[in-house]
Length: 333
Image (cartoon, rainbow, N blue to C red; front, side, top):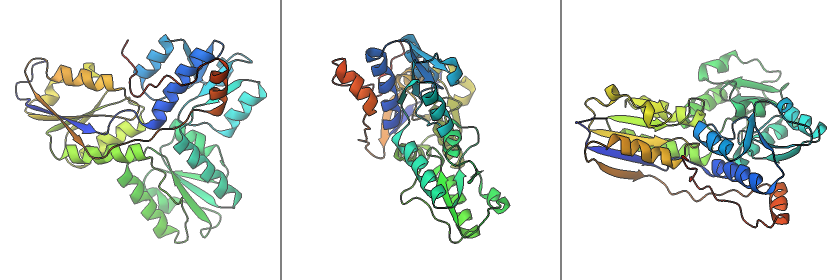
């Protein structure tokens, strides 16, 4: 790839794996070590095909639904969460379940359960058909209303406008979610919401980093899967600031015409993207000529989540005292 104008690559930080993704990958890798095979995973454990293929190569079997899992087998639920109906099906069939749902997604589920028990209509701000939204909606389907844009608020019809609560998908654009929440507050002045923002820390931090980098570059490349909500939001945030931006799976998706006239190119990665893909993109951009690589870091992250107790117990019984820390090190091999 010859890009004669390119002089600088600016890496946004933080980027890549968040604590929930690290945990989910660790869960699958440890389960492969200590649980009787085969190990099944319902849906993509995280939304990145490189991660999924690496785990498949190690022995994980990925399925779309539980009817593909044999009776009495071990099944891992993905980081995006599942509905009570899926959990009940697994229990009814006697499947051994390991839940890799991100704790921050679990928090939203618990909020939905609480508001439903208290008699609220619940407006969920999120994207239809996303795995996380499907799981959250399943907690109280008869009480939940889904919106994705502020203009949808006026069309909402709830039983009691004075008894409304809101929740949000954890991987939304911070600015878009704010606009929806403000529209909800105007329509329903007595609306209540969670004490702490549902949008996860990693989503907020990566969007903040993109806002900083986008102002300094001619072009931004976001490495992530097409079905990754948080990666798509990074593209939208950058475009909203007027910076041309593209979502790519890996270095092979880079198109030469994007780079024409660009002297400074920004690179970041969604929360499900392994760091080796970032390294490969940087190497591809700088292969022909020497370019300066700088990192713009807006905040340090030190969040870690513990493993599910049921898996820790199995690991301890098998003599495995600590999980294999993925820490963003899922390899390309």
